[in-house]
Image (cartoon, rainbow, N blue to C red):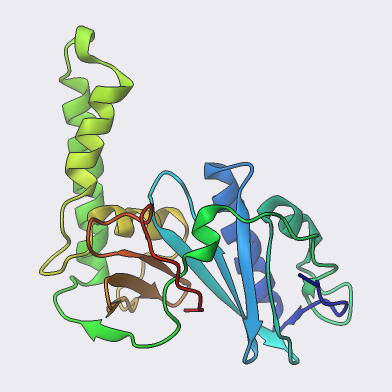
Length: 231
């Protein structure tokens, strides 16, 4: 795969800063994280997979100028290459990192089109309240474990029980909302817009700052058929 010589520049400095924050959060969960980059139509879609949540995270950045490429790179090297203050002609990527061999999920992206909004998703305030209650429940159940059962396996069982619960009247598991908040996609504002979309077996939670996508059936992304596209 050929990496384009001309490095992408962003529409404004906020785009660069938000992308840097997103990459930093991915690296918090996986220091060796890779991201797949797809540029086209005046935008750059950045796909990552934080392992703690078993979802795909997508951050879209508006570009200045026309770019067309598809490459998987190190998230850490991309973060280091970001020019967030516009020391070049505009904020952007000083030089795209060399491609890396992509992890399996990088060839298993959600479909590009066919998304339809699904009803039943609670509002942003209720989503955040539900997350707060879930974290409190996890801590209470963890604290109640007797010493001989205070193991990683027992805690994982509690976590799976809580985070696999469906959100509102939807098929979306609570862990997708947890991922959205942890990655900075779900922010505290009374009129913050959130929406749920579906395309085939895929579900996608969308906010103005990014999306979280996963397979609706079974909730995971470990047994996907390969579908390549952008969100």
